[in-house]
Image 1 (cartoon, rainbow, N blue to C red):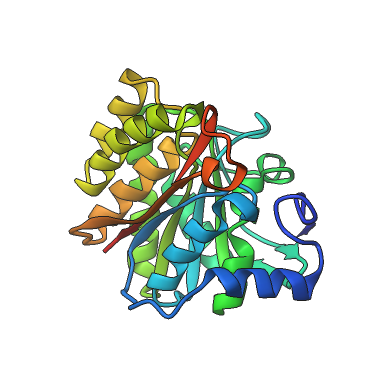
Image 2 (tube, rainbow, N blue to C red; image 1 turned 90 degrees about the vertical axis):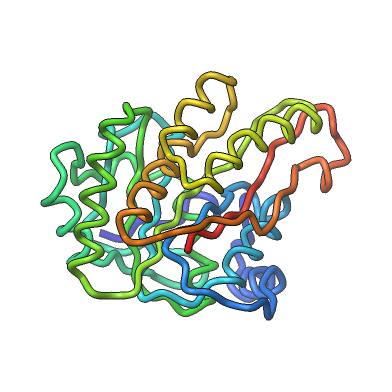
Length: 265
C-alpha cells in the first residue's frame, strides 16, 4: 500500500525542491543529542515549522522514527498502527518499518492494524519531510484516540519492549500542538502548566493537568505515551527547546495556537 500525501500543497509545499529548501531553512547547526523522545508540532509549516525544525536540529538522526499522533478525523480504531507499505510526500516514498511495527502490534492488546485512521491524518504526515531531509528512511505510524491512562501505559509498554528488543536507534515522536484558539496570554499560561509536567517526566500529571485545566492540547495522549515509553527506555530529563504561537506569524494574538518543541533524553 502507498499512502498518498493528504496535505501537500496546504500544510507544506507540493513542489519537491521548494519543500526541501523550506525544511532545510528550518534546520540549524545546533548541538545534537541522542534523543529518546520528542514533542513536535504538526501545523502548517508557515506557523510551526520553525519550532519543529528546532527540535529536529538538536537530535542525532535515528534509524527509525515511531510517530505517535492524535486522531483528528475520528476514523479507524482507538489505537491504529500501520505495519506495511509506504507513505508518499513530494520528497519521495518513506517505508513503514514492518519488523518494528509488527513487534509493537504483537505486544499490545489495544493496538489494531488499521489504515483508515491514517489516510487523511496530517499529524503523522507533516513529520515525514523533516525525517526525509535528515536521512531517516523508515518509520512507524501510530494514531490514537482519547484513551484512559491505564491504556496509555499498556501501549507505552508495548512500544518500549519492541524498541528495546530491536537494538536499533529509535526516536519516539509525539506529534502535538498545544492550546487552540485562546488569547496568547491564556495559551501561554495553560501551555506552561502542561510543559511543566512534560519537563518533570510526569505523564500522569500531564494527562490529569490537561483535563483539569481544560487545555486543548490535541496530542496529550501521544505525549503521555511517549513519556511513559521514554522513561521505560531510560530517559532521565526533558527540556523545551522552543515555544511559539501562531500569533507571531498571523499578528492575531486574540486567538492563537501554541506550539512546543521538547526533547527527552
